[in-house]
Length: 306
Length: 141
Image (cartoon, rainbow over all chains, first blue to last red; front, side):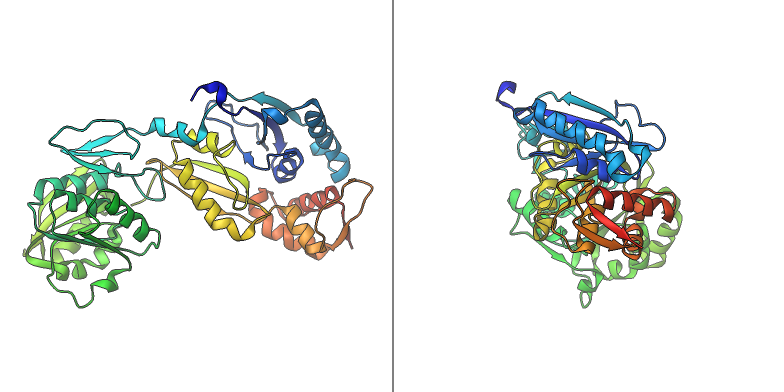
């Protein structure tokens, strides 16, 4: 698509006294555009002076007429009189044309594929060509869930790539986007069960599994640790990339879920929580074989037995 | 794990009708946020309120994920509701379309206190009263 085909917009920018931004927004949102933004237009724009904030509305270029601009000027000019508030006199008003851009797709430019070992994580629209020996995960980035770039997620993914041999039954406690469960399935796990209390997680992770052709191996559910009740030693791999206080309070449940010959990876633990988390894991009758540290995040890998 | 916040974006969008057009596109795009995902989630969350303008505060994290909270409706909407009128005055300054009591102004000021960034209740009430006058709504008492 050429830039000439893209719609053009005019930004209507007012520097308004804080507290009055809503009313100013209503005043300048005239015509076809009713959406308004508050705050600094970009990181390159100077901060508004103390006590003021930017209020911005937008007019499509085809509707940007002298008449519309006059209406906005007049409405702003009338504000001190209609409100009885002198603070609203002589507000700075600017009309700025924006460079044409396809906003529905331009944000995608900032998303680059990334690699964890031989696993290449790419967006569905990515044109990158993975190596023949790569595992490939297609992931729609930037929604409510992480995109696998967090240190704890990457470490867990690397642990899975290093340790999954094929045929394992995997439990993912606090599965979120499902990225770890799907990684395990791509690595050859026989089955994956993930649960998360966030109701948005289940559809997102099921879609991720489907998009990566492992839906038959994966089951994700909206649930908490109660979903483990009655299960003992069923899982060859137990993953928990969650808040470390939850790991601490459910260390016993996680241990019980682990098969006698299985292994675990617990992550999401910041440095200042590492000591109590380590102590709790050991006290639960688990053994720590490895502690991987990435930035300030600790990941504990181990098995049953002291 | 606690996620690092890289930005907060405040918008007002028509319920159920947000689009990637400005300001949504440039505001979120500058942080690398999935604009289509926000538009879909916002529209799903506000579909039942079609016809209203909904203030929304979006928090963007370092991994470019986001979440958002819907804020209280604009003061003018609350005032019209309190006054029992459909729309504000066409001829502001000369036309009175409805009335609210000082008590109602105080209630609205309480609701809007955080959003208005007002330093105290008196300042918040002054803003609500000004908004009422600007909408052709008279404050009684």
